[in-house]
Image (cartoon, rainbow, N blue to C red; front, side):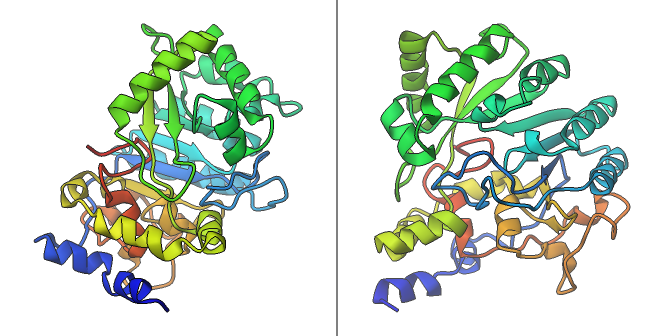
Length: 332
């Protein structure tokens, strides 16, 4: 191990919190239930921390989806259901989850890769989302074809643009519309995102000028050094440098607004985690307190997570570097 790697390994996230006068992370009231419905996806992006792709077979079953809805119904503080994957729309229970959550008067967010709308048999998705007032959050790592296709695959950019025009035509993303459409920027390599506000302005200007596309917000999200992106960093010989970058840019002012403070993550098979990144690392929820991993069948509601310890690791530097990073973009 290089000297840099040793330095990074020694600089644990817990130590960083202590040095900043912050105690161990604990959860507040759970407001968001984020559900990974499986790893099946029509794409295989280089930065994907889920390691999703067309050949993955991990898919949430209907009984698990029904238990998620029961847990949501029993947890009035959880006002948002956030569906992710993979491509969540490919899950057979996708419509069941959306309609069930809306009947409970919960807000629903779908993490959509845009190109899934052009998969055979999926053309119903945009109108379904519109009819159920679903918020759509879509990855678009640049407003140029070269950069997007480099990260997400050949032809992805043009399909993404076509999908955004489709959504705009349905009312998504237009300035006065309640149909929320947000875009997500991930860096193309091992560096931190630029300032979110200025990048959003540039995106808005270029997408409007070049394609007539409208959207509401741009979220900048730091690439997490786990799974597929971590493997890519190792191949590039830049893993140690990237971890050093994250550690050296630790920003303690991001800690109070970390998404794990108000979110609980559910895996495709029903396991409970403190965040989606911990889920991919199979790091059990801190609320388990050394037990086996908790599942949605072990609890009656989400009150067990209030004020519970949050499991952390070196990857948490990815959420606290610079302006911070969460599923809702920069924290500052």
